Amino acid sequence: LLNLALKLFILQQMDGSRKRVAYYYDAEIGCYHYGRGHPMRPFRITLTHNLICSYGLNERMKIYRPLRATADQMKQFHSDDYIEFLKSKDGMEELVFTKSMHRYNVGDDCPLFNGMFSFCQISAGGSLACAQKITSEEADIVINWGGGLHHARSREASGFCYVNDIVLAILHLLEYYQRVLYIDIDCHHGDGVEEAFYATNRVLTMSFHKFGEFFPGSGDINDIGADEGRYYAVNVPLRDGITDEYYQQLFEPIVHMAVQYFQPNVIVMQCGSDSLSGDRLGVLNLTAKGHGNCVEYVRSLNIPLMLVGGGGYTIKNVARCWTYETALAIGAELDNNLPVHEYIGFYAPDFLLHFAPTNIENRNTCTYLEETRNTILRNLRLMPVAPSVQMEPYRPRRIPHQISIADIVDLEMATSDERMPRTLFFTFMSLIRKCNILQKWTSVIKMAINDSTRIQHNLL
Ligand SMILES: [Zn+2]
Image (cartoon, rainbow, N blue to C red; front, top):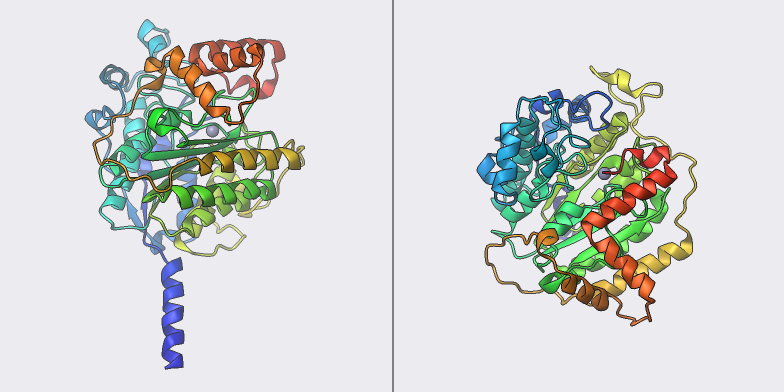
């Protein structure tokens, strides 16, 4: 009897750690090119896929090529005219900057490149397919490294992102589930996703990001959501150089409490790898182990999980990180020596999976860490436990075009729950921060003054 009990116990343990993983990849995605010198390189998805296969991980999960997202599917979130514009520009590399390009913020950070719309279709198609796989309950974890383009807005491109595959996927999930938790560990604030769900309690958005003189400028700790969505947006602002250990001390308690209070039916996690050390644009200092620890922690919660990519501009480290995280999803262990394969040359000179942090200064002091954590945990406690919500079809509110000054002032009042006396100047400054256009210009002016090479690429 004891033997049987033991066997049952072991079986149970195994069940908890073994997950059905579905992985989405379209080999064409790596062929698109943003243009010479542009840091966003879709080829990194090919690099990742090849490393994944060279470890044999493809045999331990289901691999699918997703259908491409249609314009109609994209219009579930994006405005019709914006999608029609993207569609009309597919296959064009325009040298002249037209008025419509300006209107949709295309042409600078988000260049027009050959096959731009097809690229968006593959990226968004992968995330939509992931969401469908979760709702049909055919997989416990779904992966689309070609997705995670969190900056795209309903009617404009932003930060290398054109179509917000994450919002589209979450909208599909909301048709089946009451509550979706979104976690974003990219170095940049997940502004596009936060904005889409800022006023609802059905999606809790949580972003860990570098804050202060850094793209996109939003993601203040006091931005906690509005209306029904008040307390359902969580922002964890970080300073330069945060290390694995410090990151973990924020990530685990915050996610733990959010899951306890919110009780999500499904988690969508954006694994942007520009938070790794040595990133071309990022300023944080995580190793693949520290980054992967977040994935491992979220996986251990035993809630259906969707993993998407995002930023990541030192592409050999992007491939290392996402391969490691694919292995974590499956529950496989990887040899630190990379297998010999077609692209092994990219990993010179060490040819190893893991890499060490750099020696940049960690500007997140212990006090800063503790204060940040306490403020966020205090806000999370104000959220009603597992809100039972109406299962009505959800249309995201387009905040920047609808929010009024009255809303902004009201929000300011709501967030200062300590009722700290605020000087007129402080209130004025936070008002400015809230206004997108002004914010863009203050950033531009700041950049002109500082003109540091580091922020050069991150603005606009
Ligand atoms: Zn990023």
